Amino acid sequence: MLSRTSEYALRAAVYLAQQPLGEPIPGRRISDELSVPPKYLQSILRELVRSRVLSASPGKGGGFCTTRDPKDIPLKEVLSPFESVAASPNRCPFGNAVCSDDDPCAGHERWKRVKLEYEHFLVETSLYDVSSRRSDY
Image (cartoon, rainbow, N blue to C red; front, side, top):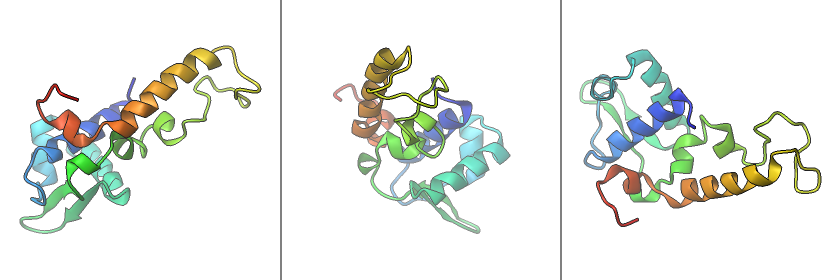
């Protein structure tokens, strides 16, 4: 359901959410821990910095960390730069130029239910929720 880029972004954000708040983790360490190609991960991490999910500190002892408590970062913020459904929930995934409740495509009603549930999950689920080994959410 997620693109490879989105999956890597989510995995990196979850990994950073598991670290002490404000402690920068070098990109290379993240890459090694997650088995993600370093250059690919660097571009993903830069996008997460641009979207203010992560912050970056350069130089020795630098790295990446979440910009705030993982409880306050919904998954939608992590995935929106990479996923069209998360970023543009009104876009028709079947490529139809016109698709709305007033002028639906053939898959509109079914997709609408899935999309609403997915959107709810992305908004209501935080990085903390998926980064801890909890079963109470």
